[in-house]
Length: 259
Image (tube, rainbow, N blue to C red):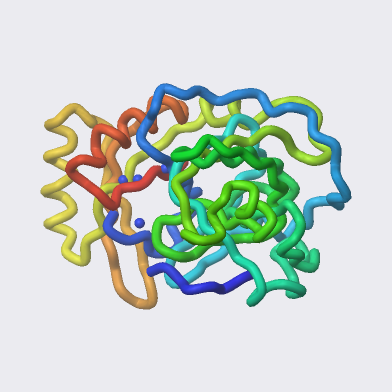
């Protein structure tokens, strides 16, 4: 797994401190787009997905929970690319990174997921296969191979705002994630406090504002106790992302979690 510059998060707090047993799912405010069933995509040389790549992992105090399925997943955010420094090294799924191949790194999508990346300011598109984890820099959502970045004309600037859409998974037959996401319960994490009274005060405000199932969750991190405030609850990803968009104006570092 690549360890580029590490980033120091209620699937939306000022910081995700590892361990609450929830999946962190990065999302963007709801744009009205809805999950799409993935197209059938040929394996393209991809092998079986290593079981170890589904395990939660922690980078710089932030824990990531890989999804078991990619069906219907999409997000909008900043893309970057990685090249010579990692060329020839092992990727998260055990392959050798080839910066000239059409691959990408993502924090939580299953290995061998095919994603369509659309650069929003010029409309260019490229389809890549996820075979690595990352990026772990700032608010970037995906790292492209050099070849992928070339297709989007982003080698020079290094980053670009993109829309990521899952279009298929090697060896997968039919959609599964869209249904699963709509069946799950989500919360938006809006804060993490060392003082319990501050957390309780905020959760009372959230409940009074209509988020009646908001809660405080205790977490022990490196011997210190934190109190996490999570607004909710929201049934299904679509409803959760709308709620996150509403809360993000007040809580800029909020993020979604699956219960």
